[in-house]
Image (cartoon, helix red, strand yellow):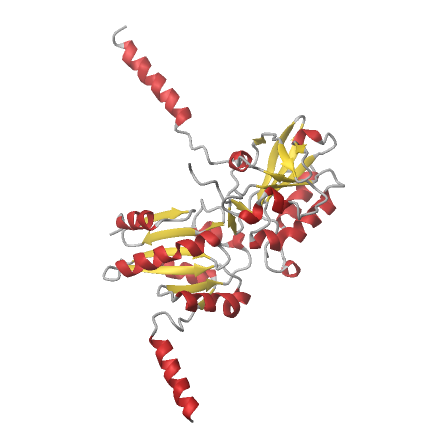
Length: 161
Length: 203
């Protein structure tokens, strides 16, 4: 009984930590496409990454910081993990938890990149990190097949706001 | 003369800028001639496309030791060489990564690989840039035309990097079947996820 109380307390404390227990939704490309096609004045910053990708992991804090710095604006950071769906519990969820990621994380469950990569951007050759900034209301769009510094990301986003 | 001079000067500048301003990192498209190279193999010998007079072409693959996708495809790259070397299209593997950024891709680390095909270091990264390679693994099928090698396929090996047993479409093998039959590949360019090439830090 005694230990149960502490266990509950512990769970309560952990739940209070931002980002803990974030549900990582596993989605198909059609769902991602629907979200990106939504007619909204929100600017989406969509970053394609993976836990195994060094440069991606390195630049993730920039997306977190840009997300929180623009929390009062209509900006939404979406982190799309390209890890295999089989790695969701083993790699992705522990990573999201350990980093306390606040931005929404989804895992794109598609086995054949050739079937969807070109629909995100015709120029994307398939290396990650890859970032898409999109605003469907203003019909603005920018893509980056490279690592982005915080300054570069901030500057890129500024053109949308 | 006074009027013509500024005009011809303008033409000259425009002509010049059309060369200077051309994007340089576009790399090869299918149909382009691939420039030959001279790169160091893990056995210390220099390798060029021109060395193998019997080759009808090559399967050039930019790959490395460290990328999880390159590792996932390693056995399938070895299998490609086993299948196509005897038919005149051997594999040539090129590691373009800067060991300063990826120490696991150093020339010394490359020695751990014992492939039946060359595993070359693109130390200057000029060849990866010339090809327009962006990631590992990334594959280029070259076909001999006289003394030239023409890019006939660019892209992925197949449609499932995680599990070779679940592959439905073998992109490069389908292309090879057509190329070896003297036909252009129907699907000559495919996309795949891979690790960004670890470029040298700009000095």
